[in-house]
Length: 84
Image 1 (cartoon, rainbow, N blue to C red):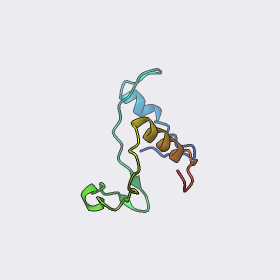
Image 2 (image 1 turned 45 degrees about the horizontal axis):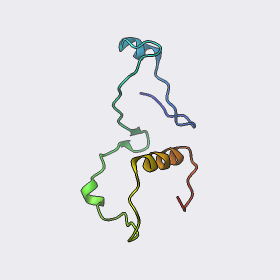
Image 3 (image 1 turned 90 degrees about the vertical axis):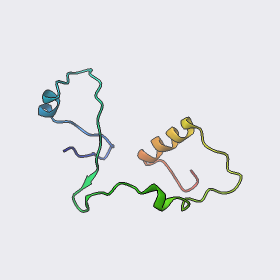
Image 4 (image 1 turned 90 degrees about the horizontal axis):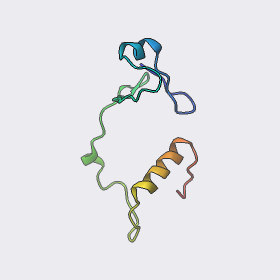
């Protein structure tokens, strides 16, 4: 198990990396499951249950993938305000 720090980063234990055969410079593919001590295992999001709850004003143009990526990065960095 790893913990996300205040900067949004995680550190993998040396024993875990060694058991995976990972070395400095290697690229790893990981699967993430969020576990919160206060909530236990979180259930997967049921997208059908929330479909239609996110209202987009009429006439709003769709975002490009690059625009979505930029907004996600700003959100993780705590740089979003109500206008973004």
